[in-house]
Picture 1 (cartoon, one colour):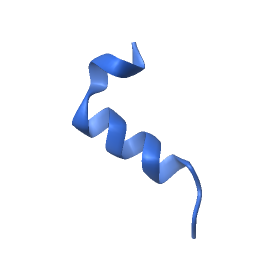
Picture 2 (cartoon, rainbow, N blue to C red):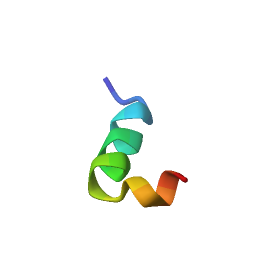
Picture 3 (cartoon, rainbow, N blue to C red):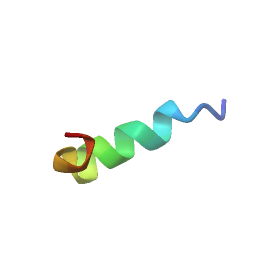
Length: 20
């Protein structure tokens, strides 16, 4: 229980424009 996915989800939910 410590995958980087949780961080990606937070970033996407916080700023989806950053992923693009």
